[in-house]
Amino acid sequence: MNEEIGVNKKNKKREGAIYHAHDRSLKQAMKDVRVARDFFNYHLPEKIKKIINLETLKLEDGSFVDPELKAFYTDVLYAV
Image (cartoon, rainbow, N blue to C red; front, side, top):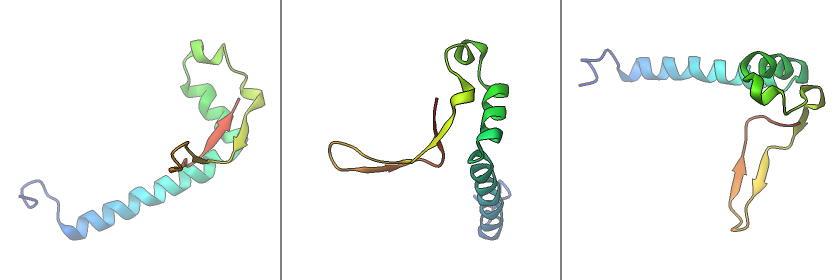
């Protein structure tokens, strides 16, 4: 079945490596407040941009523990 759609184990590994490289690059770039501000300014709808102040973006710690003591992690988290 995998052969029918042109996917094999070797290609999956290669595709995964490319995905992870882009994922790491985007995460690293978004840790720069200037890059994040430009990204949000371009991609957020005007309705949202009217109620937040992108000039106050602050990079936050992305780990949390909920009341049931389950840990959660984000890649990049900003406060406005």
